[in-house]
Length: 148
Image: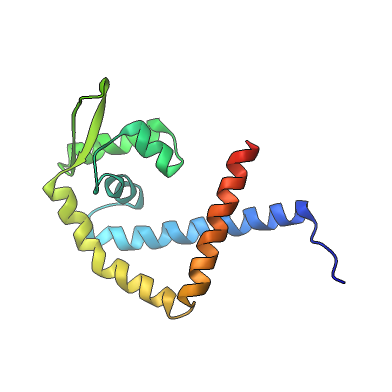
């Protein structure tokens, strides 16, 4: 019979692994975004509103970062003409963030290299293993939310 893992060690090891993984994802995102004239952060905020307009607060919640950080990035993207703020029919003060045609085009420039990066990872990890890892990360995130 095998001994159950120590939960405190599991927490520490998981956190360190996720921190390292976060760094790896950020480095990859910076590399992918650079040719389109974006940073990882700008790509992340712009990508959040490609499907539908969102408020700054909604983007922040979805990304797990502060509203102030999203606002600063959105303001810079607006200054560059990659997104715009529109009136929100549901809230007088909370504007909707909308990608412009230039913003959509910038993200499209990233897509071929993004696809190639996904393929490189897929060459080293089966889709089933990758899906299992994603499911485990989502379950861990849900468990963390329930303990906060």
